[in-house]
Length: 391
Image (cartoon, rainbow, N blue to C red; front, side, top):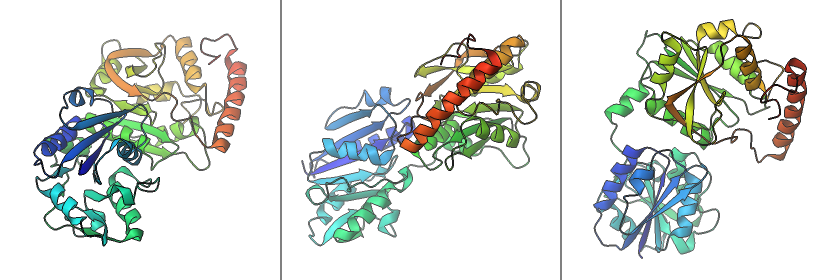
């Protein structure tokens, strides 16, 4: 095989379909294969199940970002030349041949699609036998991966943009425009989504935000609380985000949650109907599920925030920093006769405990110690016999 075209995919079916349609239009020469790496996406399975021909589909079980996806694709690749496409990029029919032919020049370490500068391109190519180690694909934000690979190639020789090798990002659709226009100037915010995170630059948060922006069509704001240095637990950033929120409705959402299309409207109806609930939560269709209170994503009205706060500006109990704050809230709502309500028409996907399963040993030790302290304080407040206290 002359060329292996590696495409990382993170979960936008329309963008993925446009990329696949463009790849299907490539000529037979040079001989090429396509390696599609699904980075634990939410809803690409039906599309990828229809892929046939010289294409390999790799499914990653845990989201790790485009760089890790491309590394996985390289392990399955067999071509002499690797071509990495940015997610959603559209390759014109002659581009792959031009990139392949350019690398016949031994003085080139890498070739990129036509662009004012190689680091602004949407595709990069290199000879695999010369650049195949662990450093071939450095860690980088998804939208900067092609540039990072070009920089990694530069110490080995010249990296040049190839005239006529046209690879462009996909056209912006009407849906993209609606999702990105969160509200017009002067328009009231209907929904505030508060997202605490330990890694504000990481792929997990970007996936969460991408799903929210794509599937939320009402005027909304996204409030991200960077909780990484030093860690503050879960309660403090959530309470801080809720204090900053301006919406009539509020959602607390873990950064490892992906909402599905139509997720918000059923929740709003349950909060604003004839028999309104105090707190509602969607059904988790990909991941573990709690029927009593799946607190990795839940919604409530502003008057609930004011009525059930432990103290002014403290919706979660401030002495339960990492764990048990959801069970404490559940106990308080049950005592008031207003337990959280599951809304099965709203669906999400959740990478359970990704937010606290840190590989950092110091952070992990801090989390474990704080969980033990939280359990002691929870049992002082409610007793050990409360359902959920042993979690």
